[in-house]
Length: 386
Image 1 (cartoon, rainbow, N blue to C red):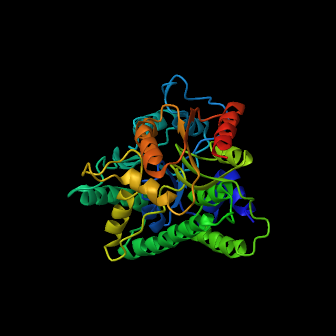
Image 2: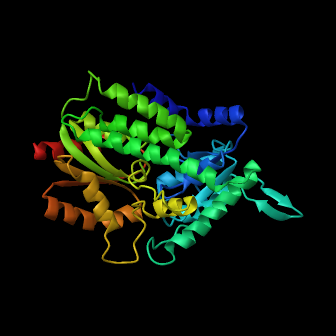
């Protein structure tokens, strides 16, 4: 039932290369859930989320500070090894201190010449998406629309085409369906027991980051139909909410570990996963504005509204916990992840005081999340809830 999604994750690089060979169109990589991949899709480009791997770091030591986020370091390490050479362009977002500087290291360790005319750059291999720190206020939308136009221009130069409003509208329709399907998949986990485990839900959602969204929509529609008659549904466990830093195929082993210990992840707030699809599009607006407004509504831990009384992160956590019968909350924060670490004390206090739920704090490296030490912590937490 989930083999297609697992296969996409395991062979994501090979699949992207085959897609390029079949279509003759470019693939472009990006970092962070706030990136407006809809613009690339409208140009016929394959957006590919840049993630790490579980192999040891080989190339970046001596370049990127060793006490920086290991997830970020591993992403650039793969680029330096040539794993991401199939990408025609890369977009770096300013979503944390280390990611904001990855454009320099990517150019240094995995350089690729861009197109120039009379020594004047026409298109660059590594591009910067300058996402606003304040995501509300008078200038947030027009500023973001201007950044989106830059992305659109990069895509147009690589595809030798013009992206029209009709192209953007078609892209919006595909992504709106995708977000709706992801929310539908998420909502069925309210059942006791849910028809899908937390790790299975992660596989479905994560796989969408490496393939065209319209193809993924087809797979998800088929899955939702199949789930109605599922006879091997997961057994009931202690219903948990997981809030974590970048959770790719390496750190998702934490989800598998929690469920192996008798927990059941029924909802989550994950950076490389479920953060982006809760927002909807203002389809009555011009398409580029609709994309900008959706991008600005992504509940990223690094962003802040202009109004200090507007609590976007807490509202998102409350929404994704409501009606899931949560019995406990687990935070897993990668070492040096300052965005998640800085918000944790506040969110912990709100959860404990307003929801009266126990909270387990865990932190650690990008590698080895399924360690025996973490297993002991999780088992003790679940036993306390019992």
